Length: 114
Length: 112
Image 1 (tube, rainbow over the protein chains, first blue to last red):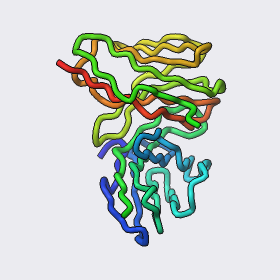
Image 2 (cartoon, rainbow over the protein chains, first blue to last red):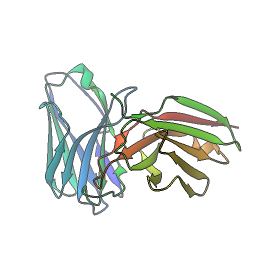
Image 3 (cartoon, one colour):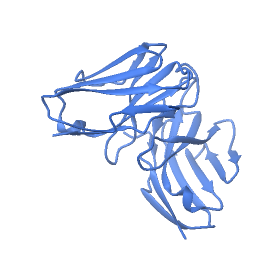
Image 4 (cartoon, one colour):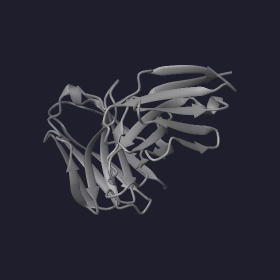
């Protein structure tokens, strides 16, 4: 596979469930990002990892827990979510986060919280 | 408070004509601007960018214009093609880091 892949593509979960979103990049990049896109809102940066270290947490609630075991994989662990967390979650990668490298996005996971 | 605004949620243009997508920003610290294009069920893909030291950047059918005094940028697509039908996002960046601030997007439909 090439580029940035995300699984699952669609997820429906109850507020008491625990689930994880997975992102994998095959571009040899060292920075990975999680974005959230809610209806009629701009993409919002959630987390940034550079060389597996978290460099940015954009005031994201603790019910979202990121994990970056290596430069190619990024997870977003979800627990006790709220209906307003329903959104498109996009993963991106770039060569590094310390400079203006182009970001490559995955197709996203459409999350619905019931 | 949105720092990057795309006030037109949608735009319809005939094939062969010019498409003009607009973007306004409020943060005067932004010095690098990008346009991304998104098809349904796909992630956004980078289209074209411009640094604040320039007022125009051209790449084939796509040209981005920057008016720093008005804090306004626009993307021109000419001639428009049906394959250009997508959602276009404006994004801005400060300094050297790659943290992007996005607009809400404009859905462009190019009709035959």
